[in-house]
Image 1 (cartoon, helix red, strand yellow):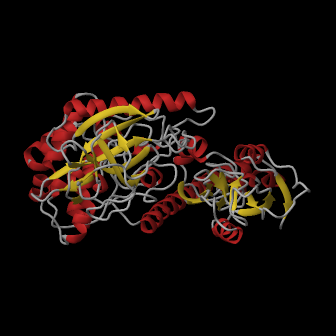
Image 2 (tube, rainbow, N blue to C red):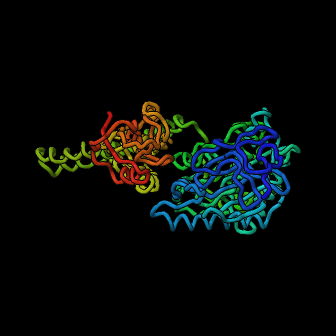
Length: 565
């Protein structure tokens, strides 16, 4: 089997710890649980260092051994569904996640095989190979070179003209249109996944399944603030070609304005995204209109396809025609800063209330005059007191009290509740909480029962759930080092000595109650088992461990003993 160095592409006579040509070291370069540098896959690809990790898998640098050229290798390894990898490199699902692991693995393979059939298409990173190994799937892609668009923009200050933007992004538009023709949606178009090549043209990378790019799907989602469309923030919303259209419009907005749009999740609460021409006066009015239509929150009001968007960006006449064909939204109010707009609304309400009160007083005076005249002729004077009583009641203004939002689910019960959305403006902040379920409202201002005018702003603090940290790999650490590492992450270590027959270094960690890489709540107690000195005889047993502790100890062959803390 031919093996080449993933660093310098020189051929190696056999599997080695380092390359004799460039001196590149293989061992210990990738974390435990991932593929070591130098691993050969499919009999022809050598794994290099990790380039990127997301909720769906790991992207490695690599090399093709036969042709000796660089590639990138994407391994399907979902963090929320996969258990720890064995020494044989075989990937296993977590207990209870077998079905979802298998179905998402099939989605991963189908996606990359579909892209392989349409690449090399202009503007898309080519998929060269897709194969199964180690109970998972690998997708091998070309190494396109170039730099990410975000970095390119940082090194090229100044605004870009619409002509420059369209020339650079035309291959990407063509590539996304090719994906749409075979029923694929990218869902991750952003400056991070667009690379600018030496010739100034752009190419799209960063393929992923729908689960990775949709909040609440079961995978650890990967969304891009300012570029992910509103429908990607809920599994209840349908995604389509217009989802990629939104992201492309956001990329163009960033390139011509110098800043990304307001994140869609924030816009859904209060849409304050300015028009492109407002931010950058040099942007033509027609182009600003195109981007405003392309970034509509409601898909039905948005430009629907990528070819439509590109044609509108390059033709003012087509923009006018397209604007007439799109559904008409409600009349847009003049753009005002948030505080100014609130004051403006309050002033109008106060003026209207004053007019109504004045009319009520005039009507009452007229009625009083008519009643008084009748009383003088037909009613004894004593009766006048019975008529005047209702006057104060009529003049009282209705009082509105703030509803009690605390404990309600913000997404399910407040954000989409037309009764609340029509009456109040909500300002939402997120906060970790160990006691309040994720998505539930922790507190509000003004408080429930306080007098409030309709249209006023209500500040809500929504729970993000318990703060989670990743369990570090402290196996082999000294007791002091392990305690320091765990405490630095907000975890509480509880150390126990275990019998040591000489197989372990005395005073070092041999196992923990929680596996490395597992997400745990801040403040959780982590049981750490320390190897005793082989000469020390341990007879007492530590307090009863949890099921996970017992399993961890049993798998390592240790016997719990005295508590050293």
